[in-house]
Image (cartoon, rainbow, N blue to C red; front, side, top):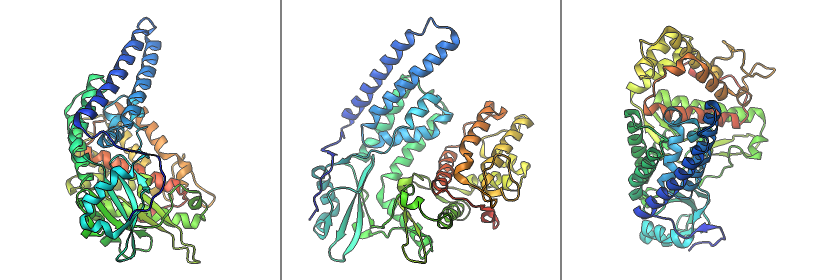
Length: 457
């Protein structure tokens, strides 16, 4: 029996192939006609003013296109987000910026539309659950309902996939790629085609909840009994390819006021553990959760005098396995920067395929400086950089350092920007993870030097 609550929601979503393709095409026609008309009006401007005006027009139309695509639930939104992640190597800055506005949908599917899906997926077991009609989370591919399993009294989460999501993935990807090409917002290339194939592969992985259940169990086993991390328990008997059932774990958003009010000691403890988790993923397990947005984490605040606060890890659908053939060059670059070993950085970048031996020495030197900058927090205590932010105790201030902005500025202004090769698709996901780790620690406003974390490697 479901517990009823009121909530603004959609009664249905466009699931038909032609419905979704027409919605995308209509948005493209509007964006394209608007762009053509406005650019015609800039034809007689001076070259520099015309370029500036055209960039502004492209930005406006790209934002319009992103807003229209955002109205469709499903893989359209996911594709846009992934293209924003990789867009700096493929798309113009204006289009990439617009695609970054594509955030997960917060409007849920109504109970009348989602209940039949739950009934179908749970079968006879549906009657065993008291399900809250109002979801506790809604995204582009699925929504999550809290429930109580009456026979056991367990509080659980039901992550239920929207109807026809799997069937729409390939046509959604084809539609948005065709649209971007027609609007001349992207140029076809081998690297771009490889990236499209990777998006297709990743999205099919993310909608396979039996795979996600297995990945969750693996991380649960690795972190069982850990002093800081909590991984939900999977109820395998109720899971299907479209329904994930796991234990409900209490927690607050990382950027909540209650978390910000914790003492620096408590916030540092959480932040350092989060960084250690990433190092374990990279160096020990070879499996990395590549979707580090804040919605995938919760902070459990311990009200006891022990203050054993914990991090709840959610959503393991984007866990990717990395072969050693890819990881070793990455480790060479990371450890080379850690030890200020430019020869090792050079070897790693060439083995990874993002640099070439024939590039000028100045380009390799620029890239080495970038690598050293990116691991600034890890080496600050023994090799401080002039722009690093530190407190009175000499501890690195993650949020105040503005490291991503400084690294981006260095990359854009250096000689290597003219030589840099589009990196392997795997590297984009790893880059996303790195930025997510930094953002998480910055959100905790942590201040610590993690020099010892790489000592074992």
